[in-house]
Image 1 (cartoon, rainbow, N blue to C red):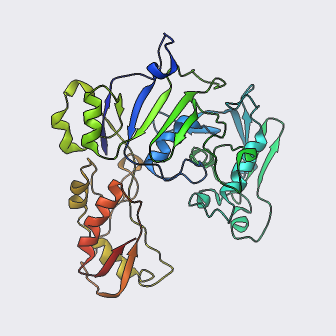
Image 2 (image 1 turned 60 degrees about the horizontal axis):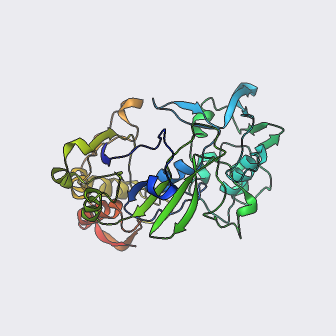
Image 3 (image 1 turned 135 degrees about the vertical axis):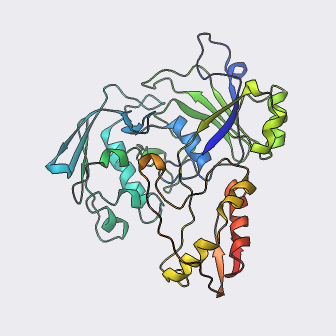
Length: 365
């Protein structure tokens, strides 16, 4: 997959102009589904949260991992116990010290059955995590001790550190939660914190003065502009500095010196609820999967993705897809399909629903 973006400004500068005049103005196409790190899953939310928060470790430039808030780690018990030591002198954006218990609080919140976070399953390897999510126990295998965070796993897991790069594995401040609801003005441990937030309109991010890494000198103003054509006009008028994604059909109207492209490693898929009819039947799932014209759906969304029959990206090894006989099954029941509205996902899904008509009536919800 490859994304196109426009950029006229940098995040860092040697000068120090006024807050408003120096801001890097960034466009996103929709309000993120959430900016709560324990529940964020959409691309826009990930983009913003990555500026606000960090974890013990994060994804490296070469697809591996690198230390962020952790200084070092050790593996014990043949991979059942993982211990991470925090860097010294870490603070939240309000000046409060970052403590190991803030990570423990985060994992209890991710696994809280009342929140029903879609990210909870990512951490079921933690001892008692699944049972906690199912309300069978009240303790999980995560412990804070001085400057260390310790994870006790159900079984040896030598790649546990890669799981902790997940954006949900970020510390939280319970004192800023009201009825377990995320507060946009909660302090952060990333390069920025939210200074002003108008839902559906804009966000103003200010540099975190206590950030442990390279200090960002430019504030960031994120503006929500739904129409790509309108965003490009604002860019050409000098009212926007950075457009993260440009539809392929709009590239011809933009001077090439402003356009940069880069690959983005991700696999997009549709998930079936296999616990309920009709998708509890393998033959039904196969029929619906085979009916999708993937290339047509990608073209409709105007993205440079590639259709595939395997889940893993090629860089992680090729999987041989089993050839199945084409099948078509007529379903009498109405199929309900959910998607985030106002996004390219909806465009893709509309194309998929058209392909599925031969198998049954489908409705978008």
